[in-house]
Length: 313
Image (cartoon, rainbow, N blue to C red; front, side):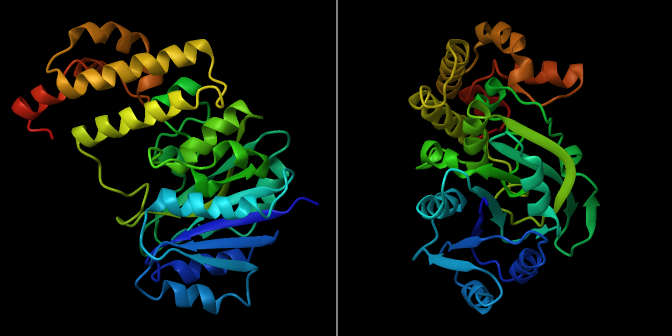
């Protein structure tokens, strides 16, 4: 029988962690092992984890200092890699969500032949009050996503709502610091190595409270966005053979990288607009025609011009 390992990342999570752990205890299909990586917490998070060791099959790994969300999950997945076989499964967990009781049972039943399966969630606030009945609808998440959209940074897989095969771990790891969102990286490999399956069932309550590592985080500046996108695409191109990118997908990534580099140093680049317009469905989230055209035209504006005339940094 396949085993399920939960990889949980924590950092100063005392406010919601116990409720999260309670929801793991309540699973109708219990996890076989849990690897909790604490990312240098300075509050009572470690004590809460330790107080639950007799309730859950949990091992705690502690980082001496905070290194960030990606690094914590990368460490947890490295630990899982040494304990699991190719036929086992991994579920990712954030410290502030609440898993519905049948989450693991549902995902394990529904994964079929796919490499990764993911469900939907209710959206709740810091007090546990319902914000929206569907995370997928709330965030305009499309269940069908091409590799070109993934290259452009549009991910449709929320890690804490997914279950994936441990056989992906040798491909995924290590997760570079240039990968800002770990579940996007996992989804790209899953898409090319067995496929991704979306199911309509809600499997958790996804909490947004303003301090989330992802989901509720502040919007980055234009300079940060361009720099992050540059590193992301460069990382993809370094792994294009492992990712099994087609020639067309590779050319798309190379062209997008070229545009990203030019936008960081050139003020106005109207020559890129035709390509951006032709690839608009890969580059942008769904929107009405006017908004989409605005997005397309804005790509002609480079950082120097945006800083000078639009006050963007």
